[in-house]
Amino acid sequence: MTSQRMPLVLVADDNQDAADSLAIALSFFGCEAVAVYDADDCLSMASALQPDVIVLDLHMPSMSGLDAALQLRLLPHQSHLIAVTGDASVEAAQRVKEVGFVAHWVKPIDPDKLANQIRELTELTAVAPSGAALHLWQEGLPSSSDLAGA
Image (cartoon, rainbow, N blue to C red):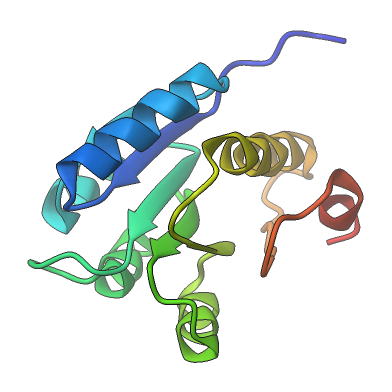
């Protein structure tokens, strides 16, 4: 098996402790992670870093994660978007799906399982035909076979 680079993950959450803790945990589980604390910084860093994945809190004060996701979709580099929230409602899950997130995680998050999903997303992207869009939606934790069939 060949060595693959670590996925680059941007974590955006206005709760600085939560953002830092998740970034550290993702780093421990094999991702390169950077934390930011508001949607504006998320947009700037996403443009500069071009991360593989952006883990985005939906409830931030200056701009919601949903509004930030719409802005992120205007950037030339398209990162996979993963929503994190305390809202477990069906309506929240449907809204994040409509905006273009690939997954909806309800806090508290298991960083090991999240890192597994991030690695699977980036591995699938690496083997997808050039120019192919990868559209996944998981309400829960996907297995490799679930993602391979998408």
